[in-house]
Every structure is written in structure tokens, then in C-alpha cells.
Length: 352
Image 1: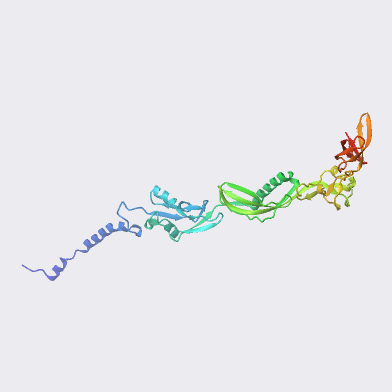
Image 2: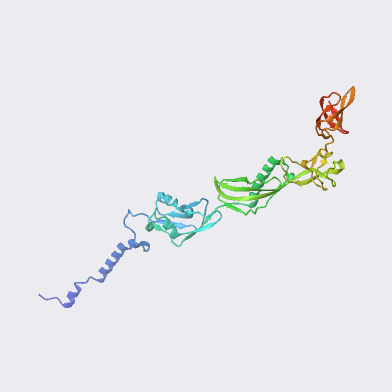
């Protein structure tokens, strides 16, 4: 038998070019799906789904804490999984009216207890600006709360209820205030004594949803206006006030010691004795004047008995001091009996 040549033996161990190309195409067809989109794709139908997280550029929040669902959109898994992830806390909100930043890396870190990082598709460098919504309150609104409380207290203490009789101002500087959104309540409580018609201090609190969010002491300055009797001209110590000595004027009054008050009726002042020199324009107080004692204890008086059919005068002795209109005791020197009468001009007592 004839042996094959060297050339024939070489071709019997190598496939033809057409067969090699066919095998290459077949291999590509099997491998390509494993690298769809440039990443290996699991062929295991039970493999967990990836979760896509997209951070918003800006997110507004209202509560003290905010969650992932308030600052990002989620997709890629079943809805129950996504809903649970949306409720995961991301941290404390900024103060009302302020902002804070949150990046992707922080989100992944805070999801570790809820989701494996390998299942999260999120740009670590992505960032969202967190804005805390606020209820902005002006200083004027705060001042009105305090002034209303001060006016209410002053009316109860002094009887001044007319708006024109009371002027008030807040002397504390009150800056605009950013409060959390929610039901707002104001608490205004007096601090210290503070007399009406002067300076008063109050502690003001802003309460939102039952929690005190802001507090500050606030000082109020008051002036009370009243029409009173004043000296129309200089009055000397001991002078008996005559109608020409007094007039009425609207003035700013101040708080007076207990038992003292301003005289508002001119007839109340006429006939009173000045207990001190009074400059023109001085508002008259009850402590500045007194009834003159025209009858002194032990002095002789005339007792006058008067009826429609009888007028009788007898001598007597005053048993106490008295001024015009005072009802005092005296002894009838003819009968020796003690009687009572009203002090009248001329050291007379009218006895009923």
C-alpha cells in the first residue's frame, strides 16, 4: 500500500476555515446574553432584584426627622419592598427655614440595616438639598400678643378699658421667627410685679403641636391717661382750695400707693386744705389734701335744732374734731346729754 505524503497528513488534523467560523459564531450566541449592558446577568431566576434610587435635587420636609421616600424616588423591586425602604429614616431635619445636604454615600450607609449595598444602584456622589418648611412669624405678631395680655391685665387692675386711655409699646427687639408648621399657641405670662402705667415684663412662649419651640422675655412700657383735678395756680401749705384754685386736665398718671387715688371731680377738691405746697398743673391726689378741721375737740359750738315749726339754738361742747359735713358728737350744756350733729359754717352743729 502507498503511504500518504507529508502534505496529505498535515491537512487531516486541522478543520477547514468555514467550520472554525461557524464554531466561533455559535460561541458568541451563547455568551453574549451573559454580558448584556456590559454587566454579567444572573441566570438564577431566584436572584434578588436591584433597587434604583434617584435623589431629588431639592426636597421640602416638615417634621423633625425625614425619610428616604421624602427625598428620593425608588424603583426596581416589588412595591412592598419599596414602601418599606421609603420609610427608612435618613436623619434629623434642619431647623425650620434652614437647609441641609444629603449625599448618595450617606443614603447607602443608612440603608445597611434594610438592604445589602450590592442591591443598591445609586450614584454615591449624588446630592439632595433638604429644606425644612417653616411658619414665619413677624415681630409685630409677637408684640400684638404681648400688648393684648398687658392691656387685659391693666384693665382688670385699674378699670382703664378705653383704648385712648392706655398707650403701650414693646421695648424689646423682636426678630422674625421661623416655627415648625402646625397648630400654634401663644403663652404670655407676667414676670415680676410691674405697676400699671410703667414697665412690665412678660415671658412669651410659642407652642407648636403642644411643644414649646421658642421663648423670650419681653418688656412692655405703658402710659395711662386720665382726666383729673389739677392746681390751676400755685397753692400754699394750709390753703383752703377755692373753685379758682383748681381745674381739670387730661394727664399721664402713674400707679399710686395703696389707699391713694387721683381726684377727678372738682367739687370733691373745693373746700379741702392743702397738706403741701402745690405747683401749678399738679394732679391732685387724695393724700395731698384733707378736710379742714373747723371744729376741734373741746371747743364751744352752737347746737341748732330745726324743725318746720321750731328753730332752737343752745350752747354745747364738741367731743371730737370735725370739718364741714362731718357728723360728730357734742354735749348739750343745758341738758348734759350727748347729741350728734353735722358740722356747719360758724362752728355750728345741726342736730336732727
